[in-house]
Length: 101
Picture 1 (tube, rainbow, N blue to C red):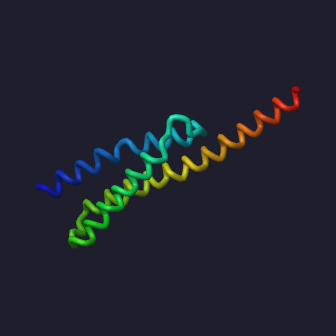
Picture 2 (cartoon, rainbow, N blue to C red; picture 1 turned 30 degrees about the vertical axis):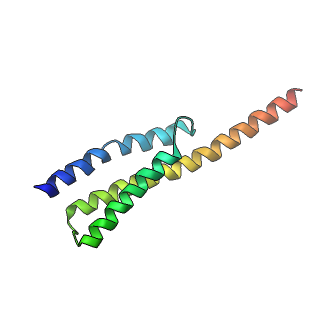
Picture 3 (cartoon, rainbow, N blue to C red; picture 1 turned 120 degrees about the vertical axis):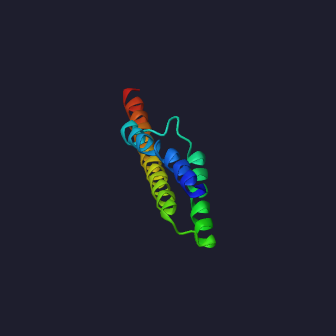
């Protein structure tokens, strides 16, 4: 029963990641996004994965830890893509302003 409850916890956390990843992909900006938050969550999943391996608790629950960590890592990748897009947009905006002057 504890394993089932843990699986439900990790699955519940994981349900929000696909929508979050889609939002990051579509928004094309880092505004309102915290890389610190993503990093903390990712490290938390890595610690959970490490604990499972250290305890030898290699059950189906571990799959959900890996799945969630992969989704958070995808969010981190999109964060850095969006940061690059923000810089490009800023540079394009700055060059437009200098051309008008």
